[in-house]
Amino acid sequence: MNPSYTLKILADFASAHTLRDYPGDCSRMHGHNWKIEVEVTASALNEHDMGMDFKTIKVATRKLAKTLDHRYLNDIPPFDTINPTAENIAQYFYQNLSKTLNIDTAKISGVTLWETDRACVRYSED
Image (tube, rainbow, N blue to C red; front, side):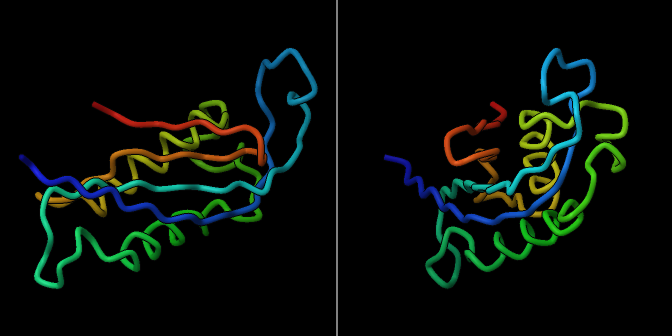
């Protein structure tokens, strides 16, 4: 049997966006208090008996979130050219955190972005 550990952290940020070509109210500038949940799956424990230190995941996630915090997303690459939908923002976090956090025994397995307390999207790659 192969061991598997799933670690999760939560972070948040606030930002505004406008959904381009959207046929509704979200085509006007509006803001959200986003919550981001990052999942890391580890197949082994390190020398401290951790899959990955929660602090490592939190620091990387908060650093990335800070670049979007209290900003208008439509002005920030890549959202200056792609629609700043919850789906695209979740993918952005997943791909950027994968570059900095993935190691041989632990990888980002999913990012869930909460737009409101009742609406979220989860992004992962196979």
